[in-house]
Image (cartoon, one colour):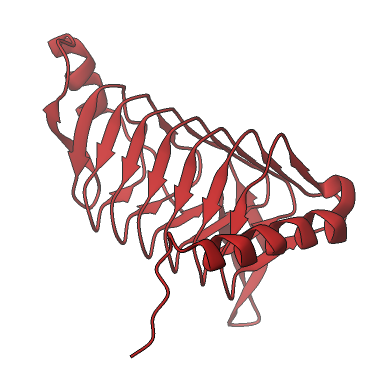
Length: 202
């Protein structure tokens, strides 16, 4: 079986061409500070008033979705593995040196809904911005919901659902996610505040 690795020069060249094609196509709606790579079968959508910004080198593996009708902002040295989805109707901001594994979902909105004449009707979205710090590892099949802030130096375990703020320097996991271990000498108060606080997802 013939297979090209992500590190092959041919794959990098084709991914680099895809990046520049997207930059030309979206013009000012895709802002970059340097070259990046876009893998095969990626779905990149930017609405008229939307913006995607790469603050440095971003590696987008194949079969990913980036969609913005608001602001989707990346720092430098970002790696997004296959089959992940980031959708910004308001704002998603990601810092530097962040690795996003496979099948990750990051969305800054919920569907709004109401009952009309005995039927459930979708009625737009409710939104709240997401902020993800620097030096963060997001494991496979993690879901990050609207209104969440994640500090620097954080590891999020596989299959976690993040629906509340996460402080810096910790390992979290679970559904909903909770602190499993602090990665630095943080105070006991910080951990207690995280455990007692919550972010309600609609």
